[in-house]
Image (cartoon, rainbow, N blue to C red):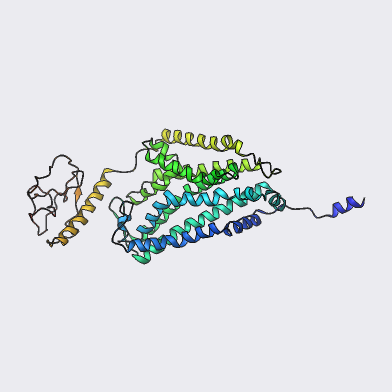
Length: 418
């Protein structure tokens, strides 16, 4: 009788709340030295890199917007975004999300954590939210630091789009912010894959490397001559599709398809990781036995999702091309020719022309014009490498002080004998 009364009066043990578990898991993540180093590097490194590169004479012209780092500070965050989508973001998600559950396996602290929280579901939610918070903190640091470094080193100037049109500083700021927001979707998908690998593979190093390996496979798929529907169905497509925001009009169709695909991958991978975690036997701390079900519960749903997404994209006709249009290429070639012509006229001390006089259009007549024999002076026909002569718009009179050939084309900078 005494024992039963004492048991009735004993306070009932309550489950720990998700908020308390989230704060506890976030403190555990931030207390790790490698996480602190990565967060500090994300908030300091891009600013120093962009500021240093912007002051150099040589620029990373082989990257998107790298050639404009001397002209505007908004080119810096776009260069960092291109690098981050290829290397930085997959590695960051591997270190954070790919190790958040495996740490408990290595330390053997699952039973203590279950006694404190008394709910495997709440433990999973708290760990997942803490990992996503740290990943978002790193991505925010990359965007803010690179923008601050570019604006401080170069200034808030207009940005030249991929098709040659100018974006005012305000429009450039909004578009750069949208580009980084687009990169968040595939980053969250990689984080969800990291959670799945950490739960399914436990102490195995493959769980830590899984997001990086998946990201590498997605990048390889983007380089191979695969159908457009297959590339759109992968979350990694958004790491390059954000460039469609810098055309007029913006290429929104592929970006929306990539956002939906990334969201579906995030939900599917997180649900698979949650299901594996709830089915785990925590009574044996040395053997989680979840790796045996990783193929059926983790890999097969993702493969089925990719197949279904490809079928839907192909059926709805979303894959209508790469977004590269002839008029956009012609405007870009004409703008580049105008800048090069003015630069050459200044270096060779020739009469300068204005931007209005060099408002050219590009018409592809490849094969129509041939290069003159060596040793002879050219008679005009300034052209792009593909043989597309750039000529002024029809009906516009020439006001340049340089001589204009009879064929209607502008003279090149090498149009005189030396």
